[in-house]
Each structure stands twice: as structure tokens, then as C-alpha cells.
Length: 105
Image 1 (cartoon, rainbow, N blue to C red):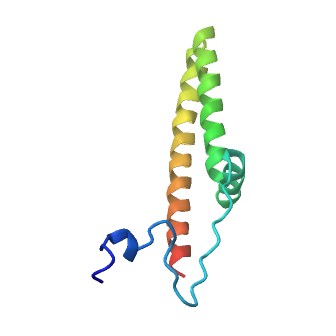
Image 2 (image 1 turned 30 degrees about the vertical axis):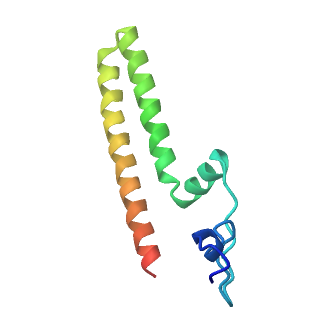
């Protein structure tokens, strides 16, 4: 050792990953885009997008009714919006609970 100076780089080659016998790395899953992820999540829990569309529809028609002066109809659509929001939140909670149970198995 007297002839060579000691350095950490000579002991560890930090440019390469360590070589471990019989180790096979798991291949990375392909990166999924927004559309692929949206389709996958919709197939896993289709009630969430249905609730979201119901909420948006009730809100839109409620605001249109309010603008036209139909206060009774506007109130009914706002109540329907609240129901649709509750349905969406319940669908999300059921989906989270189901995913948690699925992972334990």
C-alpha cells in the first residue's frame, strides 16, 4: 500500500451499481399517461366518474335555471347536486376501502 495513495474512489466505483450475485432487478412498469391512467381508474371504480358527471350536470342546470329566474327548479337542481356530491364521496370511500382490502390479500 505504500506505493499507491488511498482514495475512496479507488475502493468504491460509484459510477456503477453494486454487483450482487443472483439478483435480478424487477423491470420498471411502463409510464402511463393521463388517458391510460384515467381509463384504468374508471374501470376500477366506475361510480366516481358517474357521480362527477351527475354533480356537474346538476350544477350546470341549476345555474341555468337560476339565471332564467326559475327559482323552484334551481333549488331542486342544487339539492340534486348535493346528492350527487355525496354519492361521489361515498364511491371514492368504497373504492379506497376495496383497494385496501385487495392489497392485504
